[in-house]
Image (cartoon, rainbow, N blue to C red):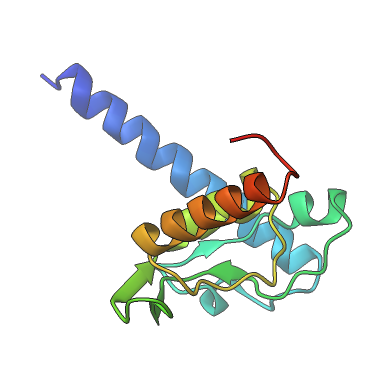
Length: 125
């Protein structure tokens, strides 16, 4: 007998697979790719419908893990495909944004900017 956890996990996997197939079909329909083999198995296909509704240019057909080095501390980092999907599709960030800081340095930079704005009288602390 399957446990409830296994059943939910299988349902999530099916939903993810169905969503992947839907996105690939749509990319083919729009002529952005020729066939599914153009999307690596470990990549997440973009949702072209989201990009079209936002009138955005589509720079790539999928999200892939990106390795980079933090410009502030020099630490090697990984920007996962799923984090990119959330960043671009949910928060609606510019599709041309590229990572340059690790999480810790990004938080320090945000704090620095907030403090500078407050000091200049643009926003309260």
